[in-house]
Image (spheres, rainbow, N blue to C red):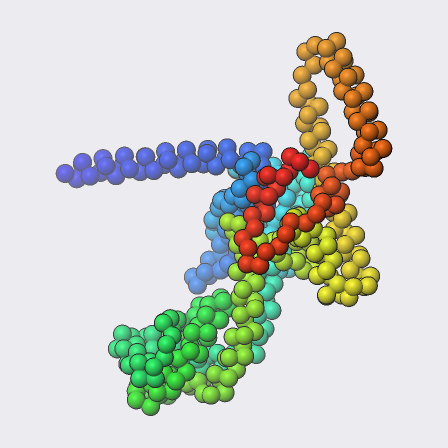
Length: 431
């Protein structure tokens, strides 16, 4: 029986490895020739191990935004050159030669990683000499802004967290809490949730839900003796050598006590503040749909370009938004618009040159006399047509960028779901 079981284990292991290798080859086929944008995520676990996750994003031949994790690995440290080498080794493993952007968080160490990658990726496949390679993560910048606010309200947030931690710490305590909820006739259907303190969005959800149960928490403090005792526990264990820092911090937080009316008032104001950032982060963090066309800022300049490539927006929408920020007649507004237009032309000319080079390389010159005759006809026809269009005032020498920007914008509809990539799939041939 054991021999039979061992045989099955070996077969399953072999089959799994075979499937794994097949999937690698399939993914390599999908990535072949594609220009990808990379996102990185680095963190340190509670066991003090360093990790990195590398994800590739690209638009496939059917104009569908694709996303695949290329690597999830342990790394010796989070220094810039270490991260840069890991990313480059991964690109070589998958045969990826064309990289448009690498999105990293706002840590200064990642500047070193980008410098290393720019050096290694420069060459014939580099897009504008890696000019746009470094893209700072919007979600991380938002996270840094929110963290400052969280620090200012640390005590109030900790007291509310204490209350939630108490009711979620055992089934009996939660049952007592539900009795209070029923008595105060709360109509909230969501359960109080304890946050992950390293993720501010979970703190927002905790505060938003807990605030709806203020009356229930107040009643709990009157009927449940263990509730107040929970906060009066001493910190004697803090002196124990084997007590880890996380447990010590939680005990110190608990010593702050239960939430009071002032804490709930601060929470209400903070919830409204966090809601704005929460909604923005949800939109800019989308991984299976295009979101960068919705937002732009001074940090990630390519987001201005993405905004313009939304056919509902184009340059006029960007001009309107910049006017609200800097003033309609501001020189800053004009400077940004000029840079966007210049970037669009640069990117267009880069890809146009690549396509022309590719077409020249693949030209079939099997019949020189026939090719000469056909090309002569084509030149004569094109010249005549250009004159015809010039007489009509159509501007025969307009680039595709100029045609796109001069065409009317697509209509905007409130609460619509607009497929930007679908629009480009349908209209790219006509430009």
